[in-house]
Image (cartoon, rainbow, N blue to C red; front, side, top):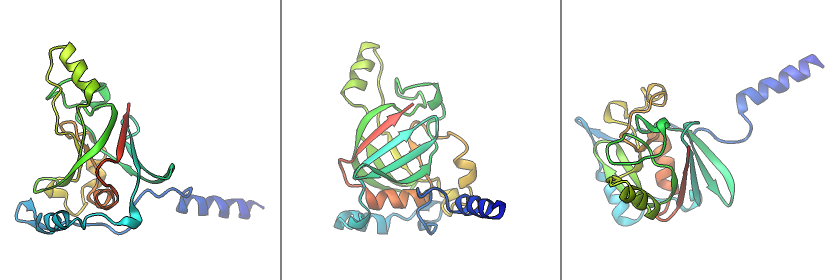
Length: 198
């Protein structure tokens, strides 16, 4: 009996509980000198070939304290990835431009952009009406340009993922590994809702 229980625990430990936490093979974006080569990315985007209809998701949730991003399809969680946030994100909600915090709220993916610095961006609709009203009430500029993006060029091959995922290093964006970003890029269409929680 002990052998059966130990065997069962071993199988659970190595296979997990059914929820994927990595998207499969590591993706290494092309680098040209000290920047990402965005030629292929821009071509796919222009032709509308950046998504894979078999992988589409319909909701994204982010939990800041847990440093996790969850992808959903038809109400079911289908993938989980680790994330890095703005340097001061655990101090609360984003209040103003330059506060190095990741916002909390309900948004949408509004744009996809290829980028030489962080590979690719999924721009979110921050600031929303509530964020703008709160900033106006306090005479602040809420900032903008918040996105989900990949790793800096020095970590294009993912050798530093363990380090970057243990630190909050962005100016307010959500950073994922390049492999996770490839999964997101191929599975997210414009308009997908994204909910960000403390």
